Image (cartoon, rainbow, N blue to C red; front, side):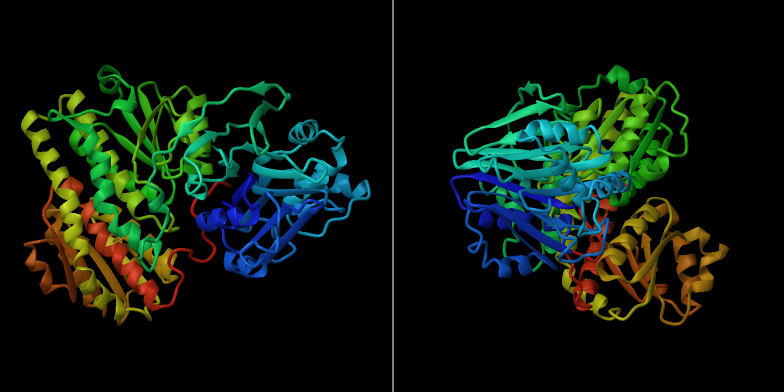
Length: 608
């Protein structure tokens, strides 16, 4: 989950690296560091804390002159956050510097070998092993040395490297962790993600597993681990560079919530043509879709919650059975992947480690894979048999909002497509659903415009210690996401429960003043959820309800009610999640939490 940036070219490297790291701080922010070649030696500066500490230490990079360097912002895996454990890591005489995203799984055995050879280690990290191993095998040729090291390390990694006696070169390599190369007339870049270099170039090369990159100011060459040169395709990134800036908003999360109407429209608009659902990039025939007998949706975190909603939509519209799995569990439970199954993997980054591992396991079992991802050229996009993009643009806040909304709409479209090819959705039914989809952006905007009322409610619960979210059917899936949003950015303990399960144990936790958020958007279940609200209210709970406009009956059981516009029951998650995002946001802000960078979390979970 760490962020890597490297630059070599005509500009001063340190300010470029700091600027790129600022765009990647969502990937890790417990420490940061840079290594720059200053014409005589590799100069290293690093510090524990947020990136601004490093910026102040180096006066915005001005105290580190040089046109070639690498930088890193860290999310700790091995060793506590500290100046010593911060990257870059070096060999003893600081002639080799390394930054690393990922985990070296066999670092203990490698470290023991190096210690036996007289090497001394300063940090508790697995990364320092790479720096010392490069020193051990170094023969004056960085490419040969890196190839030797790669044959000996196990795990996942993206590495940026520089060698003092090759000052006009930077090196990079990846295995199961994201890494891109940017090219421009002013020099060349390496980075963990596109936003880091959008300010400087849109020409990008996606590095594949076990590829070594050699960069100079004028050219970039790619090699296999056997040191054979290979040719790579340069792609143009279409993302709006302004998407990676706050644009006047207090937080990226608030900005990205406001972008949800646009990303929802961007996701469905190109896929509706002449009254039909057309997903051009999917490249799977209607015949093959119709032949699918079972769907597995596999994801992590919020993407898993979109899968929970999609299960109801797929089964309700297309009448195809769906299982939803956490990627970290799917790969270990020995799932039964029979002929006719399809695995849909959902990931914003397209690099989520557990989801990638699940994809590869299912693919090895002979099951076709459909990836729903946001990042073009990501590992999932390249390795899946079929792909559908969400086109949400860069999402910087650790807690997802707009990517979640885009994933929901992508899965709605897929479910509608499945229903059509299976003969389960009439022309009239499809036309109605499409009309409902087209109304969603304006309806989301209406809910966002009610944010002041939600903020007033949020301010009453800044001291809450426990919050429970309840719902039935799709509303339970919405509750899962609402609970996650609250806990990850406000640090308040919260749980989501299928409302019917309350009486089977959970209701014992309800006491005077406990906040219960009740989601009620499914008309057939209105009476049931009201009964559950009455149950918790009679035990002292304060009830915050989210329901459809017109369902005023709920006011008899709720202390606070937020109404959302009416839409098709299958699409209510897209509207009901907005008040829950806002509730979490305003509670977190009121408690003084760092909304964009919550403690212990990082955006792209690229390690298991």
